[in-house]
Image (cartoon, rainbow, N blue to C red; front, side, top):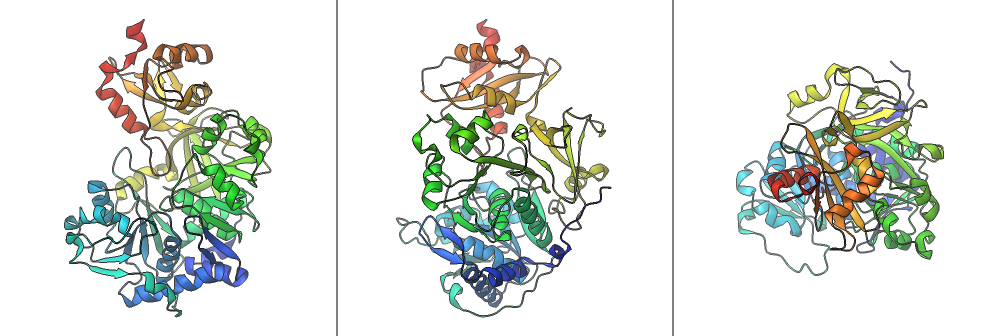
Length: 540
């Protein structure tokens, strides 16, 4: 086992203690600036509001170990509530705001939530499933922050519940004793659940702080950084990798209500952000025509996954550095690539964070040679430093941690210098004619076509049990391209075995809340209408 060092003091902190320490250190320094309405919370004010809210919540019956769901779009009160529940020792369950009907019912039921914090925009979705949630007895309600929302009447099916408006809870100015322990369960973070039932990943206070510390240090964040956060806070990427990492280094967060690719650079410019977490934004920016405004910003780094086409050209064009990491809400963040990484490693996920081990393994669980792809297996050697398993899913927990390694389901390889390279999700790798084809690699190639706005490759099953390559494309100029044009371009830049057999044009892609294309949905839809999809083999 590798001999790693880490900050042992981390193991003695709860979320509430961490916030109190940061408030004492930073006082009136702004921590949170809301793009939506201009509200600013200093470190000191955030600490006061979190303790005030914790006091009120305890008076209303919440206590250590109670599970409380959070169904909100990004707003300052969401961060206040995360810390307030942490101070109480309650367990917070962030819920994807796109969830509705059976998806919402499942998460609220499976998580054993007995109370929910929400806003008027989501009351109807809750009302539609409340009859199936007998344990849910209390709604804590924030006022709408949308200017045109207007007054909303409580849906009839919710009127039997205790409904408490939270606006008055933020000005009580009372002290509350931190009732949590660092090893307590703090949050249950659910996966997107695009290929099956969502799994609730159990994070202790220690695991959350370990994630924040390692990302902050691995990506070279400092107290001078202003972090633009526009992805949803119910996702680990925004909450742990952005907000918590910024607090770790005493920086400032600028919080957007919702994500918009077209407005991203203007937002970053307006708030003088130095850092931002992006998923598809980098490729979107890369596809835009060059402009004198490309360098008119203060951004020093973009956190990307995967990198855009021609990443070094991207860095030069926009005058910033692309940094990255490898992590997943099922376990933790194991790798980082910061400013010190050489330019030749710009497409990698970085090197190991302190306290982690990694192995790329074949289907037998044996390590693959240097440079040879295999499933990425992880092990965290920091006590309590990673997610402890899936809530109420012991069999899935054991299966994911078999052979004393966490099995990520991702394919990657490690180079001679110890840098990890992500290849694809294991389930998204296309196996055709004995070749393993990376869908991400194909997407990076085809996205360089001037008439392609966005693209997704995925496997489909046709006559045989073998995968066939399919591609869905959003055109930059609808109607300009033909399917045969795509095949001709692919034949000129791809190996023969990777050229798509099936080509379809779509108006848009289905996305998860974290900005990832739902390829499982694309595959299912395509296979259901395969005889209607343009087929290179039939056309030939």
